[in-house]
Length: 378
Image (cartoon, rainbow, N blue to C red; front, side):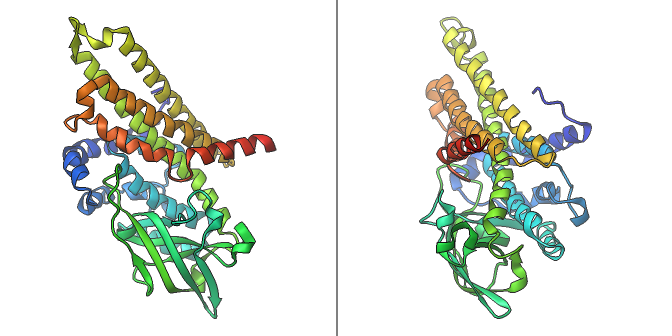
C-alpha cells in the first residue's frame, strides 16, 4: 500500500486485523450461511472499542480522524464487509448527532453507544429510494413533543439499535426545507422494528424495516433546527460514502489477494496460471483498480480532515470503489474458474457482498449525477 501509516494507525490496523483473522474469519462460512446477526461476536469487538473509533475523546471514544477510519474500515472490510457496515452505520448515526446536535444530545447519544450500543440511520423509505426528499414519513409539533408517523426500510442495526436517527417531513410541498432529524430511542410507544432481511450479501449485518405510528418524542430530541434535517443527512452521507468506499476497497484487496494466491498454486499446461498472459492481464487490472480505489478514499478522507466540503470527492470514491469491488470480485471468481463458483472458496461471497456497494447510500447512477452537478457549478 502506498499510503504511509503513522505508528498509531499501524497499531490499530494490526489489532483490528488480528481480531478479524482470529475471531471472525473462522466463523464466516457458518455465519454467512445462517444469515443471523452475531451479537456476541460484535460485543467482543465493542469490548475492544471498535465502535468508539469515531467518537471524540471528550465523549469517551478514541477520537480517530477520518483518514484513520478509512484505513481501519478497509481492514475490517477485507475480512467481512458486513461486519464493517455494522460499525459504519453506528458511526453514521453518531455523525449526524455530532453535526447537528447540541452538547446535551451529543453526550446522550455517546452515552448510549460507548457502553456498547448500536446506532441506526433511518432515511430510506419503501417508496423513495434515491429520491430522499420525497419521503412520506411525517412529523408534527404537539406542545412539548413531536409526533412521527411513517415507515423506513433497509435500516442497518434495526433490531439491536440503542438509538435511531429518523428523518421526517413537516410538509412534503416544502421539499428539503420541510425535513427535520430526530433522535428516537428503542421502546418508544408506536416504534416497531420489522424482521431481519434475508439478503444476498452482507449476511453478518442486521437489516430491517422500521414503522412509526404516532411515535411521540420530546421536543429536545429534534436535531438542530426544524427544516435542517436534509443538510444533516447529506453531511453525514458525505462521510458515510467515503467510509463505504473504504470498505469496498477492502473487498478489492481481499479478492485480489485470493486470486493471486490461487494463480500461484494452480497449474495449467505445466506452469502456474499466473504465468499465462491472459491471467496476468486480469490480475494487473485488478491491482490497478484496487490501488486507485484506495487513493480516491484517502484523498477524500484527507480533505474531510482538513474541514473541506467533500460531496464530489465522496461521490467519486463511492462510485469508483463500488464499481471496482464488483469488477475485481467478479474477476477473482473468473481466475478461480469452477472453484470460484463454489462456496468452498471465499471469492463467491466477495462477489455477493460487493454488489450492494453500487446501490446503498445513493446508487452509483445518482453519484454520477452529483458529480456532474458539482462540475457544472464549478
